[in-house]
Image 1 (cartoon, rainbow, N blue to C red):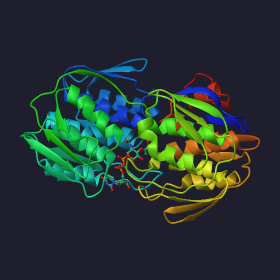
Image 2: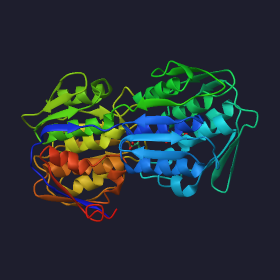
Image 3: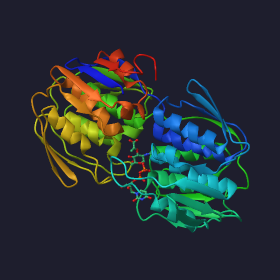
Image 4: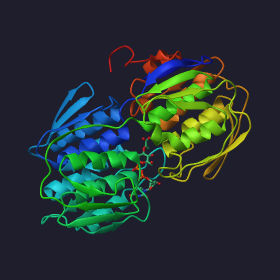
Length: 425
Ligand code: EPU
């Protein structure tokens, strides 16, 4: 198992480039199941979750050709409309094939996701939305079975709670349904809009993506398309935080500043200087220690839960006390305990973490528990005194493309040790 060895205390400087968004690439790959023609996706990040989704598409019978960041999927003939347990257990987002499979083939069998490190995360909302489109759903042997032999029919779908992949799943089901679907209380995340942009290129009729009401007019057939995935706003945000925490001067290239307003506003409040340089770059500078500023995670355009752990790492070394409130997931503070091993002062009270900034963190051996938690430990390591060893970095490899190389390019003291480093993985 790989580990990261980090020597703290080096300010980041220069440039770092952002990859395509993992959480946009995953539904885009699943959307390719909706047509028999080739779908060509550009800027697909080389991260582990993408590899898992590609394996899943192959299992279902699609051809998948990877050429650098360009992936071509050809789902001419599907053999197995099924997401098996072995794949779903390593990645919950496998449930994204449910909607397109029922939409295209009239049936799907998807393993139910179990618990995960950041909470219970059921898929009941996906299921009830598909039922509203006329799918018959049953559960047995740990699988969800969906059937719509006569095809899905357009309907009003109201989500009781905002769900990102739930919105994406039902959107993909609705594009081939008979008639009009209105999705209310839809997620407004940029990844949903990106999926709608791809589906529109494939011939779908969608209005309102990016707002909380999406209207879909079903079409009989979709065709092939070429689409470039949006930049990863969570990776960009992680680099912004890295630049400010290390009191560096860092340019974040190939990003979409409009997707980062909530984070940028908070960081400016804390004293970081962040300016837009051109349409796709942000420059972050912090000449002194940041001041503490509170955050509450919310659905987009609020503060992203996927940046909460990284923000907490920044607050552990800020001046003052900050309140961090997590409203999206019930158990997303696992990183706090590890940050405390590095000298952070944090008290958890239910869904709130109270962080009292300390003048300096100290390097320690820590364990990554999930993707964003691992990123927060790497960030803490970049400013801690001495050496930090982050164990189980396979979590970070699920969603960050070569993060150690990117950070090293900006002057960080970080190295990978283990199998992948030796070229065996
Ligand atoms: N929820 C339900 N039932 C459902 C679906 C969701 O109760 O059927 C609950 C969840 O348990 C959670 C809340 O609703 O408490 C919101 O979850 P959501 O469905 O929006 O999350 P998701 O779609 O499973 C995506 C991202 C996550 C990100 C969340 C929130 C992808 C592939 N994953 O998950 O990304 O944290 O939205 O923004 O898009 C990550 O990249 O590290 C990551 C976890």
